[in-house]
View (cartoon, rainbow, N blue to C red):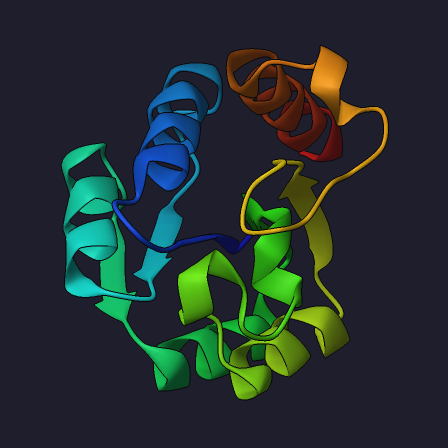
Length: 134
């Protein structure tokens, strides 16, 4: 399975997802792709096997990923404070990979129903879904 974790800004969500996945499915190789070098570095420190930064790595990795994980904004152009380009959002959204998106009420997006789910609980649910898929 090719598991790709995509994050931007400081990479906190991606870092936490990778830390939790490394505990639950240590045998799986995780690719970290940040929209900026800080996010990539953070995810690599969490234990990702490989990392890359920017638009083209997101496009390339999305082509053959089995699972893509990230905040819900990765499929919306101009989200994550403008770090997600239309090309990135389109590549992720049109990928045949299973997308596991973490709901966040930030960047002027409000997702009805996620206000009762903490970020920690959402990431735990992500890890359980990955385990189920494997």
